[in-house]
Amino acid sequence: MNAVNTEILVDIWQRLLADPRKSWVLFEHGTCVVLSTPEGDLAEQATHILREFGPVHAGSSAGDFGVIDVQGADGWVVTGHHPDVLTYVALDEPSGQEDFAVGLCGRSQRHQDGTDLHVVHVEDRKDSAGLA
Image (tube, rainbow, N blue to C red; front, side, top):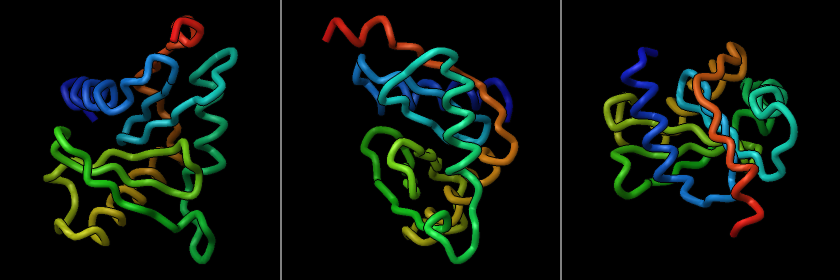
């Protein structure tokens, strides 16, 4: 993923996760881990979560997904078996526009992020959590 795509993904996630109390970490292929209780090194905390809940294991809940059509982001958010692990899928990424194709694409990206574990952005909002 090049820097332009990373910048676009950061912008999209900043708009989608506008809650000033939510810290989050973005991985290379569009997977975002929202940290409900951010502590210590956020990249390390998110990597630990994604290592466990990112990879797809056939026949288990790790293969499940849901698709959310997000307004104003020109794409979808694909959910999985952990409520704080979300993957953004752009309009031009899936092989089709139906939920199944979008979900498979997002699940594949989540799997790739869950095995590569390459952090590209950390949104640290710990200090603003007490202000809201």
